Image 1: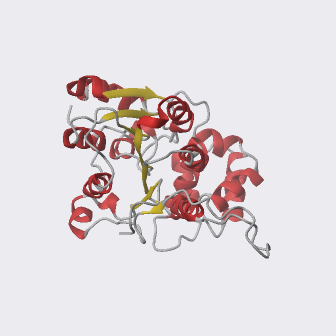
Image 2: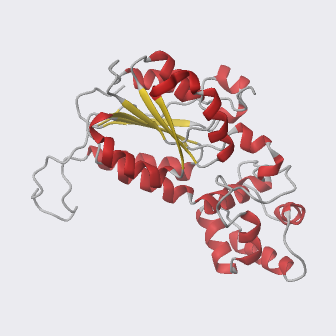
Image 3: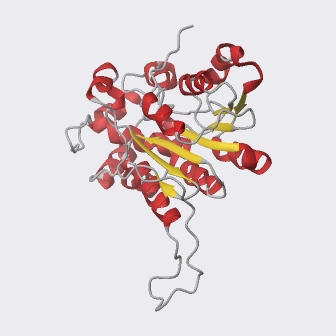
Amino acid sequence: MDCPHIPVLLDSVLDTFHHIIPNSSKNIIIDCTLGFGSMSSALLDRYEGLEIIGIDRDIDAIDYNRESMKKYANRFSLIHDSFATALRDIIKSKKDRIVGILADLGVSSYQLDNAHRGFSFHSSRLDMRMDVRDSINAEYILNHYTKPELERIFRDYGEIAEYKKLASLIASHREKTRIDSEIMQNIAMKIHSKRHLHPLTLIYQALRIEVNNELGELESLLDSTSTLNNALICIISFHSLEDRIIKTRFKQWTKSCICPQESFKCECGNNHSKGTILYKKPLVAKDSEIKNNSRARSAKLRAFHFTNSLPHF
């Protein structure tokens, strides 16, 4: 089976890790969103002594990598779990060997193109679970969440201006019949979309984030990695909610003084900086990559090095 996913910003990822990876058999990178292994295999090819631990919630990705990554023998291992859960345990046991954390927060091409998974507008299903073992999917949310809960999702995760109207339409329709993908598409057409987006884009984004607790997972990843030393974290995000969280946290990590703003003088010791933001602005895809993979258009790569020994780039 050919790899069913085109990696985004692969060259930028390789260039970013090039700054910090010594070619030693004792070093580990944790690929928090393994997907179909394109980035991990590229890193393993480049660094013969590197070990990678790949984490993914999607059993299809796990099954694919069990076969495709056999060639890396003892340098690659798999974990079928959410990265929020797995990362804490790995850092606790292998902290001194970890030189990098990689996370590509986007939905894979395979998940989008596979109608059975219910991520696409063209799917007849409303699922959107990264891990099919989870009990709550998008259809459950639309048919069981209260109107205030729906408003919260569409306001906070979709940033939809007419979130109250949207929640009301859903609540009204499901009094008559169960909400399915066809009904949801009809409802979406009654909502004004911003930035010339398809009306379902932000609705599906909000549902997917809620189904998979995506922002909570990201916050947990950042909490866990904040204890690392001499390691680099590289994250690719695809919408402003994720990018805002990453950007804010990286800025907090650079602060040497953590005293309250109302303090007249520093009392914290002024030595709390965890390291350096590698890029002043996020790296984005070049026109040539976007031409070959339109899904790269919204990708942003940010990186942070947990020491202050590297300059800004």
